Amino acid sequence: MNNTKAIIKKVLVFGISVYLLYILQTALFPYFELGGIVPNLLLILTTFYGFMRNTREGMIAGFFCGLVLDLSTGLLFGVHILALLLIGFMNGAFRKIFYGDDVKLPILFTGVSDLFYGLFMYLFFFVPRGSTHFSYFLMSVMIPEAVYSVIVAFVLYFIYAKIFEKLDRDERKVEHIL
Amino acid sequence: MNHKKGPKIPSNILFLILFTISILFLLVSYVTEFSGGVIGTVSNAVFVPMQSGVETVGSVISSEHKERKTIKELEKENSTLSKKVNSLSNQLNQIQLQKSELTDLQKLYELDQKYSNYKKTGATIIARSSDNWFNTFTINKGSKDGIENDMNVIADGGLVGLVVKTGKHYSVVRAIIDDSSNVSGMSLNTGNTCIISGSLETMTEKNRIKITNLEDKNNAIKSGEPIVTSNISNKFVPGLLIGYVDKVKLDDNEITHSGTLTPAVDFKHLQNVLVIKTKKETAD
Image 1 (cartoon, rainbow over the protein chains, first blue to last red):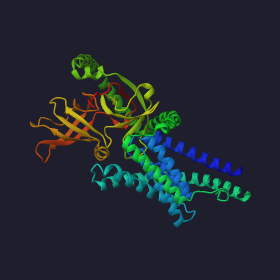
Image 2: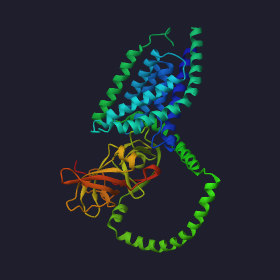
Image 3: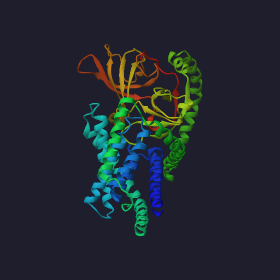
Image 4: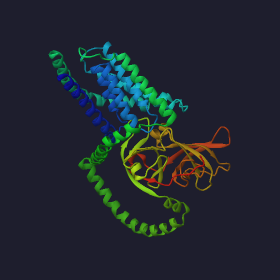
């Protein structure tokens, strides 16, 4: 009984997060672009789920965030799913290596994940079209996006640290009863 | 978490399952151009109403944000502006005279006639592409409003892009400045054809896109030359203004020219667009 309640709560928190962040990312942040660059909020969410929770939740979060992104861009369906799935998985794996409650690490890994995402998009869409200016894309798209995402992740981190703490407490309570 | 209750799939297996699903999605969409189907219908019902609301908030906030200036700057501006007002009101009178002349001339202009013959419908942009790699945006009209894939989208009298995906009440437009976009264009004055391709690199750098394969034996095309969509384009209706030539130079093959073009539309501040309901009919 309590167990299903905790799961429902978890799903609800995730659903609302995706909903709000997606709308912010596509409808509000384009007005606050810096040099034509907007942060990637759903990628930050996936990173948090992977790094601050676990591999399993990172993957699931990545899968659904990717699904939402794929539905909004009329491109090859599945590209964002694959990219964010890998990012969720990767961050789950990092978590096992660098375990700790340090603030710096999740935020740092947001940047790393964003660079990975940029590389993935470049390899998938720009290399097949014969693009050779990798250094240009690195300097004016990937790195700025990663930096902007890190800044936004810094703010989001404190919100999600609180939320995840609360979810953990609920889960522990359930385990205690069981 | 619930490891005591029921079997739970190990995360490696889960990864493989999700990985396979995403690869399957990729293959299916590559072969059949599938782009969401039922899930798309559900998601648009959930996201579109909120997006249009937040988009309006965003535009209000950002315009307020730009208005914030110090008093000194404002005073300075005020004095220069009041001087300007005087000279401008003089100019305005002159321009109003010229304007009536211009409308008469425009009626004669063949291009204008072509434009107005196309059936159009207005739409508002409610969301922009979710990351920095693509130049696509979502508009608030879809198949219910008669929008179909491959319809042309214009704004401010220039070509914006092509509808690439339609939902019930929304559609996704790929802008001509997107890196994967290619449009067949021609010079309005000489009729020479060329290919206009979007470019993320030159667009972010200089607000320009690329012209290639321009055949111009007499070197007649100079900067400022208007380029419109050509008759031989298979998705774009002819005669839509794409932009103005910025620079062209002869290629190494000594036959074709290539260079850069300034798009006619200001993509940064785009808010309202027109969708042309007349589709180009091609043999296939």
